[in-house]
Amino acid sequence: MSHEPHEVVITEDPARFLALADEHLAADPVLTTVVSTVTHRALTQVERGLPAPAHPRWWAVVRDGSGKVAGVAMRTAPFAPYPLFVLPMADEAAVALARALHARGELVGGANGALPATRVVADEAARLQGVAASVWEHTRLFELGELVEPAPVDGRLRQATADDTDVCLAWFQAFAADAAEQAGRTEGEGHEEYFTRDDMVERIDAGRVWLWEVAGAPVHLTGFNPPSFGVVRVGPVYTPKEQRGRGYASAAVAAVSRRLLDEGARVCLFTDQANPTSNRIYQALGYRPVVDMANFVVG
Image (cartoon, rainbow, N blue to C red; front, side):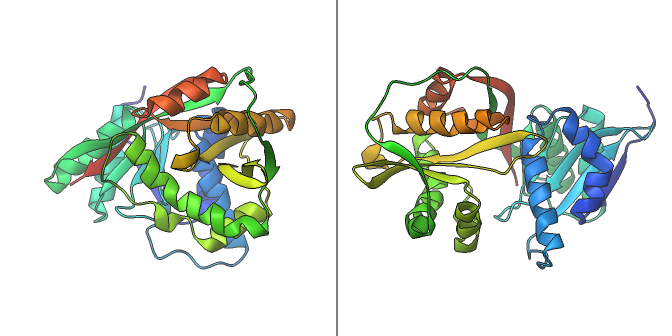
């Protein structure tokens, strides 16, 4: 291992980031799924000529003394406090990242990602800013092994259409708040503004939103992200309160997962560790834990 200082390269150009980090991302595409999908989506937006967002959007590559990629991170979340997303890296690389951000005058309000690297980044950023870092949410990344079929329930899976835009948007917007409530949290980050009508139209047009319906009425939504390096991430998964406990989530996630597997994808998803229901459901379907992550608030 090199003892020379780490170099941190920060770019607002997703194409440049992929040129630097593509091989690193592809080496473990389940672990890197969030960074890969977000970056490829940003690249598509750039290629379509869409303007850069008003919020911070950049990617970082940390190189060790030999020039090898030691870790990557990004700041692309469109909601305050615009947390970093950090993938696994050695402690020295994580400290170098936090110091590079401080040196360029960047205020870090939060950090999300793989442990222990994210904790190291958050703690060092907090130290440099004279504040403290605390965990807001513990999450876990799962990958589907062999799909285990759940018990049959009433209804059927169908692809969402343009006519479903309003209900899908409402359920996407309710997803973060309800997930926090189920996990026993009453306050935290608000993700509602992330799900815009344009975003929903794009997701539905791409065939990435599916509904479970009973007697012609939708009772559950399961979405998924576009594939990157052969990996598809399922989510969000949402059932309105009055429809919960009837097996709709298990049935829909299993059916969507089966479709994705049949298309040759590796399938993964995130759970909130504080929500025993979702963790139990997904493990019963054959999802197995990959890595523990945490969402830190800095300040």
